[in-house]
Structures are given as structure tokens and as C-alpha cells.
Image (cartoon, rainbow, N blue to C red):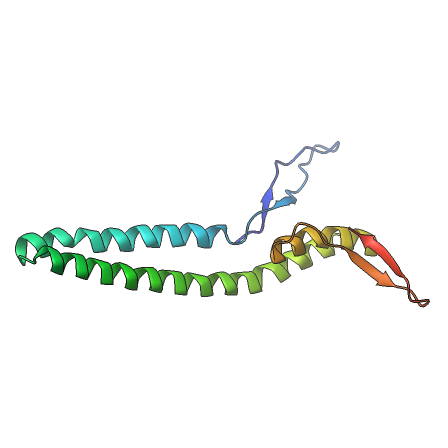
Length: 146
């Protein structure tokens, strides 16, 4: 799984192609969201697809059909949501530290590292604004990035 989308390579003056460098981070949870959507479609389709069998072959009454359908949908919804919430937690736990390390490794200094880290941290915590500051010996703060 790649956290970055590569951009097109360019030709150097020596006639060689520059290596493809990752430039823009992608959403590490996008694959999980897509999988969750397809699992939900498949499970709900399978549950609804069996209803004609119960009605025409097994001759269930309408109350039996509806009660079975409601129970099946509740179980499916609970299982899908519970499982994928755990998957999201595990993916965040592994993806964001790696993404943060990738961003910090490309920074030339402490201020640049703070500026690169803030968007990743904001995305992780879901906040709109944040800042990084260092404390001085005299008790004051020096803001590195906001």
C-alpha cells in the first residue's frame, strides 16, 4: 500500500529521467472505506436475495418474512460496523505514524519538520488548527509552526 501518489517523471539535462518522487499524501483509510462499502453491498444483497426463496418455496407469511429480515439486517449491520470500526482503528494506528515519519524525514530542519508534521497531525485528530511551540529557559514559548 502506498501513502503517496507519484507525479510524472521529468527528463534531466543529462537525458536521464528523474526518479518518481511521492508528492501528495493519499488517504490511508480510502481502501478500507471502499472495502466496507463492497462488503455491505454484498451482505445486504445476499440477505435480500434470499427473501423470495423464503416466500415462494418455504411459504413464509409476511410477518415471518419481515421479522427474519429485520433480525438479519440488524445482525449484519452490527457485525459490519463493529468489524470495520476495529479495522479503522488498527489502520490509523499503523498508517499515521508511518506517514508522519515520511514527512519528517524530508524536512531539512526543526521548523520545516514542524510545518510538515502539523497537517498530518491535524488530519489524524480531525482538528482544523494546531501549533507547535518550544519552551525557552526563561519560561516563554517560541512558536515553530501554526
